[in-house]
Length: 317
Image 1 (cartoon, rainbow, N blue to C red):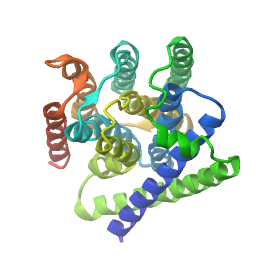
Image 2 (image 1 turned 135 degrees about the horizontal axis):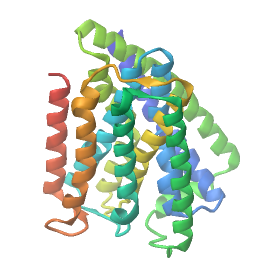
Image 3 (image 1 turned 90 degrees about the horizontal axis):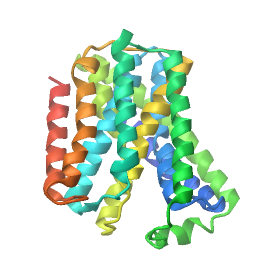
């Protein structure tokens, strides 16, 4: 039954994430938000919703390893798995503003999480509050920067615009309700199935959360990126995934810690996996610039994907 719950949970997360993204983007068009702000805020938050519900559910059930492992594993999967596979399919251009703003912010949030956890092994309510406030500051700065920036490539998502820009408010609300319901039950069953599977196999909750659950909650990002790559849309915004990673740390762990402090149970979180998270974040800088500037091509994608396979293997060792 545990495998059944995991499969049903993953399916509902995919469905819920898709409906939530579509409703969020549709609402954003209604509110006349720019595409850059949509990608880095609304869509990023929407695709982080599975991580948020899974982490909250796990924390409230007294499973802090799943809450923490889910976010760390998802952030690693977003960079290594999602970007890796997408780059293998089609070379990704990197926006010139990426390394000036969004990449440093992601690295700072990742480093801040590590420092908060290594201090006393607990992400406290105060630290959760600081993360949430930092996220608000980031969003304010992001929106102000967007207002000052010149509009770019307004026609790059014509199919999406044609469908979602004309969506009625009624349909947006229905999509939102469907997405929220699917995400709620999907997260509950995924956590239930994963913990049962971990118990029956003698594997730690953390190993399951940082692999199976993390990949499951990263499916919305994975699906969107792969579909865009298959359509040869080489101007994919790297900011969407980076924004999702920022939201995962700041909103998912921040809000979860505000409700109930998150304690480090498995020492591998601090001994190895946080270093994997920081390493994957930092390695984007040399990959982005060398030897071909401002792009992630096929061989760079293979490097990221191969490193992720090593990470998964070590998680179960």
